Image: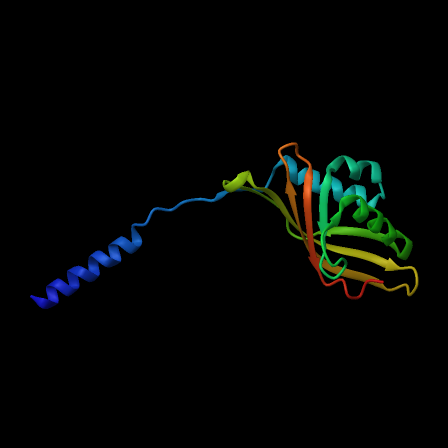
Length: 159
């Protein structure tokens, strides 16, 4: 009788563990207009098109890349810094690795595009081609503007 009770107890315990309801935290998209915004930002950067970049980012947007800046900086300052890349490197490109995802979170209506790239440029000083794998997280507001951009990669070899 004891064995039957223990077996039944374990059965019901196992049953409750497998019967928990699933809950989603949002939706992941492989195609979305905010992915297009991120791709357009990359094109504008490669073309040194500050006017186009200013249309993509919110005026109050912040940018952060550990290893490049110590803390998040205003997007206007970041854009000025990005343009100095072209003083040091030729043939700058951001080559997509895989595909970006748009993540729409239920909580707080969070809207983020995560994308993976290889930043490449040929040093004007040494002639060496530098390749830096990076991942970028772009957070959007309801107006479709980027309000925060976080970039991660090993920037230690950059001039």
